[in-house]
Image 1: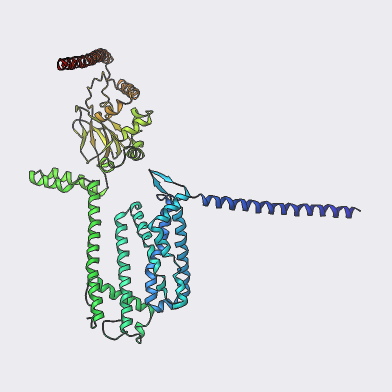
Image 2: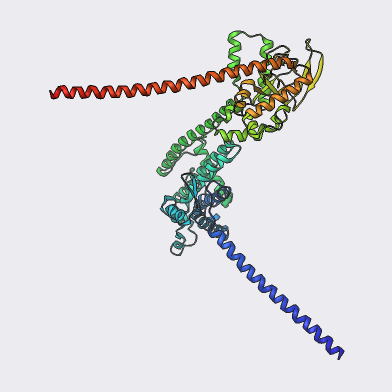
Length: 560
């Protein structure tokens, strides 16, 4: 009995486990189907932003099938040995590229467009716009099943797929997008130019081999040599020799065999005309790239040639010329920019502020008097920072000079020196600042906004300069921040023992009196303006009444 009971318990447990497994399978199936529905629903509602990363990545992918068709269709048509040797590979790649073409049309149906600056995401409108565009006609033409002609012409005629060339506009679009996004646009333009030159030479080499085949291999010294020679029988030698011959013609290097037939003369003449245009295009593009490089250097760095001409005309001494040349050389070698505001001036003001904040806000926030200030104030001040570069031994400021700006050290070391310029009292490094008191114009400052120390650059130093006028213009919009900055400045002056509180109190009382007078004058002006406006209105009314009386009298006289 005990054995029988144990058997029943084990059987029940086994049944429960099987039922549990079956239930888990059913749940997994239901969840899988629901997940598939969610994924399908998300795909149906998916909209591709034409300025987004997904669209950009897809354009880069489309470069491969478009270039494949442009390079290999003509190559396989002409070089039959290459076609026959790797036929299964070509067939697989052909239909893989067709799948990319079809999926590209699906992407185009999902690609949004801007209307009044807003991305349209209605699928019906997107499909309607794409269908009505010329690109849709090109896409349909490029995917027509011309491969059906294989049944009539034969399987080794890849030229029937020539309609795939029509999708080349996607290649140009991809190149345009890449040129605007890459960090090295000039290098990209050169690579693109070399690709175009390669495709041109490739096609010309294919035409040369086709013409040689039509005339007869080895018939004369101009055409491709006879295939009976084992050195010229392989498919690799056929292509390389044709490409080499095409390169000689299109680059006008010379050393090509003299043509002997009319067809050969015509081919050479057409190639020479193409070579002239291609050469002009290459020279023009390379000149454009070099011009862009020069323009970029002029935008980033000051024009040294103008300064050299100025020195030559005015016979500036050699020592000063050497110092200036070393300064320019330091800027150029270390890529120091002194024209940041000019470079970014084409950006919208808000976007320019965000760029400046991301680059320089950390530096400005290190200044003691600007700590705990409003972020909007710091963003305004960041746009006012002007980079300056000082050479070794150059004075940034001297004792007694009137301070019109403050400096923040971005990179380098500066020394606080005595009047002899040799004795050093302190060394300032990255993140330090000086001259902040002179631009606040604090009342009671016994130094009278004059520099209290000599600051000299030890090596090459990069500083940010903030002028008094720029700070004053920004603080007019932030009165509370102005009050806080003045309080911080007073605390610093008290620690330095350079704040005369009695003088500050007298100046403040005078300022209050002046402000009250200005207020009374403004109130008087407002009252006078009101009276003047009333008088003008009364005069206009009197004039209208007088005009009406005169018109009435004229009517009475005419009646009499």
